[in-house]
Image (cartoon, rainbow over the protein chains, first blue to last red):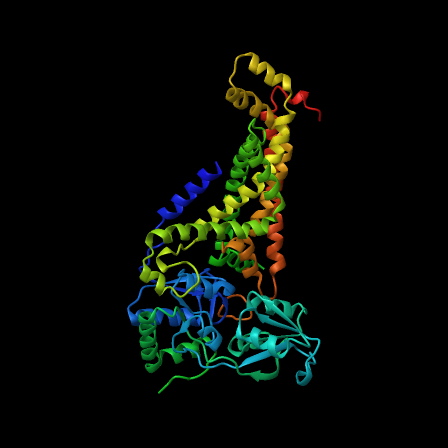
Length: 250
Length: 270
């Protein structure tokens, strides 16, 4: 009976056209506003969704968005579940060992610390603090290396969960992308504030691509270059990041 | 006041919330399919355990003792992954060429053509099979015990009527066994219902995942309503849902008990 079930499931699985690949599938996390999030309609939206759609239109590609957890987003790209990652992913040497990146579509962005208003953190000699980061991010690696010994680094699956724990008083501080934290601090009406110094990590944000997909990388880079030249990328950054930029204008 | 009501009525019926409500179906499907499979695996396991052949008995008892001991979360993660990679390996022996294997930079699958993309439907099926396998092991024990509880005289009488071994099994033994098995099976069913909260581990956008996402604090007006950490409100809805399912299940099992116990219920000590 068990064998029969397995066989039936296998036939069912092979019968579905899961191996077909006619459009470019782009993976995003859907939990990193304003880069990418799920809007009120439950659909992917945000800076990267708008930019991704613009790139696909310029390059003449049919694109489809896939929501994938952050921690498995690179393994699933390598496995071939999708062809591109646009999820606020910073270009780092470490990641370049496994995957390739398009040219950056967001300039290197300083990482910053936030804390609840009035928290007195001595960043010159931070010790015994609970530092929240999102797992598998450049900030996680930085915090582990520079703050790990004397403090507790707590990793979260999504950045939103880290924010929820800071709000609940379970964390002393969070280290994350400045562009992610900026609107959060603004919208918190003073209950969350920037603390400490900015930290510069990463080489900007780009789209992750498998190393062997050189043709796709060329297409994306070409489309991105023309969108940077005609001001579309700057306009989208200004639209989603509260007037930031321009960064790529000639 | 009425404006407030209209706003909240609109908020809890926006697309995001509707997707959440729709995701309850995954939980229900997984529980029903998992439950049905658990009974099938349980019957198979119990029959094997009751078999006259040592080999079959060994398979039955190995299944029920090993699988019962493995934590369901672990099995939930292990089985779909192992199954997926097994299928990919099988496919790869057919479709991979030497060039495509050489072109593959990732450690798995062997070549790009062999990749099997699992969507929600596939994961839901695999999750249900996992639930069926794990809780089928518990059902095996329950049904095995229930089959031994059927009075030997009933089986003897059936044999005396000239029924074959298969006829005795299907017409008398399994029919009468339900009355002894149902209390135990209703426990197993409740465990299955509880285990459906694990679906989000398999990338299924289920009720728990959406409760997390909808309840997470939002600071950005562009994203939607700005609010604090509201997760407990959404978890509360899940509590109510699971309690409702429990209540309905109890009613259903009472009805089932009455139905399967016709004519023999009076003989079962309460």
